Length: 442
Ligand SMILES: [Zn+2]
Image 1: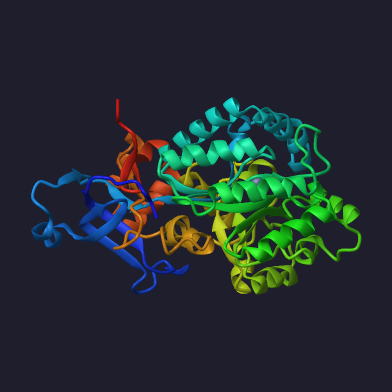
Image 2: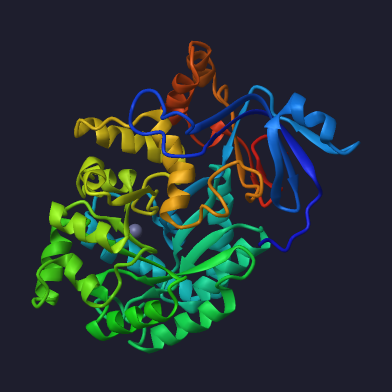
């Protein structure tokens, strides 16, 4: 619950929110979409007090309440990014490496800088400015192995009243000295951070072993023990992103039958576990993940940028394995959820699995909220939910204005936004009932 008391307000304009998975068909499943041409969202103390057609709600509004007019725009639930590294903001768009060289050449040197709390604070603020600029109000975030990097991130998110998940990277081998933690000391630091931040205001903690190669068996075992004792914690890590990585895991863990088995052995595959990438998996591994209740974060712009491979969304769907959508910045090329949808659509086209705009925007909002077990709070514009809202502008650029002028249906407009949109398409962002970004603000 947000502790911040904010003035009551009404946002008026076109509104779209999903009540359920619309499916993959051209027409959304009955009852899955709520679309109001002239909607109103009445926000009180960070929550949505009521939502409906403006003409129906108007007689019930208190006299003199502030009404913000978003006619011509499109309000949606704030976007959610299920996997991103805030510490990698400044190495985005670094040239020409695949995963393991990328880590050694760019990521690890950059992450060493986060030993300095002043640097961590500055990057955390810049990262949140950028995520709110693209309409993302919630993310599951990798910090670095320095506890101070987590304090920096949560402090900044708390001050802005945001719902965020984050955690300290656990990494006790195969990284530079400035980044490796002590096997059990890394867990002790995590437990201190959990005590300080988990469940405070809108914040939650994700246990964060970077990936199997950078943790010893002892550290993975200890992480599993913490998770077993606190099942309300999340867990985030990486899985089967790249062929070189998979070969390295099999060298480091010869006793395991495959990469996933390493995580299974230590009790890390649970309902709140997010495995980023999961590109190179067989159906048996997907089934095991589904049986554990875990999910895969599909990171299309990162997978294309690092040349990691094409994620098979349909194969996951076939075994009931939940997937979410993520930017994976800095491997990803864009923080924008719209850019992530564009990448997901392109990957889908190459596999004969096109992504409809309905399914795409569902994934960015309620779908990601459900996969992250946050849907009791966010993901919909609904009575009692938290007031996190993105206001999109279908006329944001001259080109978008030309294109959307031709659109006959909402589905066409949504698709144009997902292919042509960027930060300029986000007119405003609200979080916890407060405006946290306005495109045209001086
Ligand atoms: Zn990642």
